[in-house]
Amino acid sequence: MKKILVIPFCLAPSYYVILKVLITIALFSVHLTAMPELPEVETTLRGIAPYVEGQKITDLTVKQSALRWPVTENIQEIVRGQNIQQLTRRAKYIILKLDRGSILIHLGMSGSLRVVEPSASWRKHDHIEMQLNNNRALRYHDPRRFGCWLWSSVEHGQLKNLGPEPLSDAFDGDLLYSVSRNRKLAVKPFIMTNAVVVGVGNIYATEALFRSGIRPDRAACNISKKRYGLLAKNIKDVLAAAIHQGGTTLRDFVNSDGQPGYFQQSLDVYGRAGEPCNQCKNSLKELRLGQRSSVFCPSCQT
Image (cartoon, rainbow, N blue to C red; front, side, top):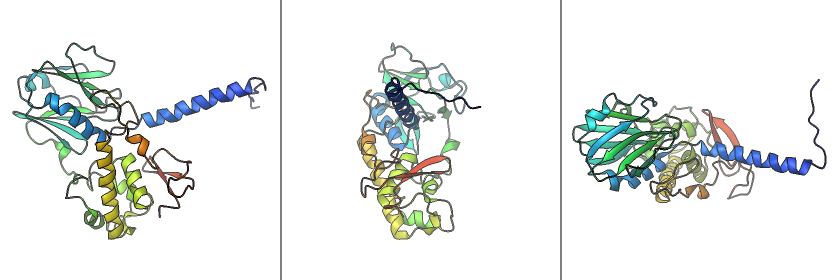
């Protein structure tokens, strides 16, 4: 026999208020698990560059080396004394170009970088600190430990076979159209494939498809060159807008100055399943593609 929870009438209002709060917290927590996407990585790069670029590495402390890929063995001895000549980004990797090679950094699912005073207390999940000769330190924080810190004197293997940068001239509608021929894969996972174009994550793929009026589950091969032209433009626009506004903070990411980004306030569809569409006011729907949630408007997207 099933046990039935009976709520006394006098307690029901309070119970439902508590239940509603718990549901709200749970839904909010789902958003907080979103991993850093390209705008967050670019924002991080721009935020730390003025404090890191051109500096000499005086020391490097590794408190936890078990990341997605183990931190390069003896990386402390290798990089100590080298100058950081330039900071660049490829896809969602940050590259510190040194005198005799480079350090490849990935933020994984929950990582962040911040510039601190060397005397600053280590927080829980702070794993790596790079001390610099300007009396600053670059601190790496990663609760899920799915990022990376890798040294190489040659090109990193992770950077091979990547598609073009979405904000570069090499990426356009013609490219999407030509690569998509005979591809029956749904268009959303198609544009999230790094071999096609790098750095188009779940949030921004969802937003760009909405702006373009394209359903996320439409087969990539069934989209015209004209529509791909519009989609490429909207991918560029939504990423550029996010970078300009400081990145999307749907988890604990903060800008390098400690202030949160604000682009999440401008999202049209991501995370809004069941809410009214901002264009037609019909209810937004949700489906799953490649184990990812995809919110769309069945009226505005075809």
